[in-house]
Length: 451
Image (tube, rainbow, N blue to C red):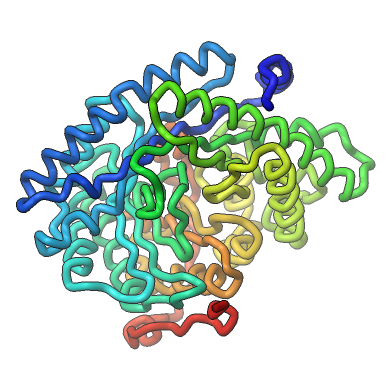
């Protein structure tokens, strides 16, 4: 039982250290909206989202005021749209526009779910759907898109990986007037989860109920402050301090999630206790790693420190709630994290190191800006590497990469707000095109067969 006095005590202790509930996300099943025509399906989607989520924003704001915890984002995730538009040849553009309008009508920050699950293969409708993603990301404002290209059970769909490389390049081209910003609303996964409340990868899985509240809790600043004074502590003591801090912030998240679900007539889904940074000094995963003993994030020992942090966060959260889910780990988006930006600017943090860090956290190649002339095959190969890490290690991995039109290594790009800014990072120039163009299906690992 969560005691409200305990929550108030925790909130009072952490308020000055950038603690927040990063998002209250309502997942809505749109399966009941499928109609004989795309126009009617889009209309039904719009009406259902507006009806189910009309009180999401005011409810989150009321709870924020009542408990003194900032609720930074209010979001909606929906059934992967590719499933809804298969009867229409995979053209989801009308549904996309309807969802974007609905999100604006109810006042949420983002809508997630213009998504496809193609880890083992693609129908012709799904291929057509994937080809609409760049146009949709150009023509909508708050709609996000994702594609799951692999899983431990299914292997990796290399044809989908190749197509995603082209999607990223085309999205950057179509949003060149905004420095390729459309790519910031798109993510490719291996082992995507159905209850992720974070964007751009949130979608409402087909295994979920009709309406579910998932909450994402973030507290890099709280963790950073907890270990700042531990100058001579050994690493086990550092891990213990992180565990205790994660326990406290997860309890707050569970309270907000339960109260939100109760007031909105929805199911309580999960609390995702990912450490999601902001571009603010002191609210950085990179700075936590440096406080653990690294001179600069990205140097030797970074992956070990991140593994310690991620494990301690999960252990603390799992003892605080029986509903921990989503991704629940540490995010290391370069543009959104002051410490990561510093590491990239110094040259210590490279794409290779980010890839290695992915082995022990949720998302490694995240909000990474690369030169605008990076070939689609290179982007696809970066995704294939990340997907391979996820597939072999039975974990979620993802890529959110922006080939910024007209930018070269060393240039800087500013996305604004929580998305921050970042230096353009170098990619390897030797070509991976022959590998990507082979296509086909990368077989699942032997340990994926657990029947």
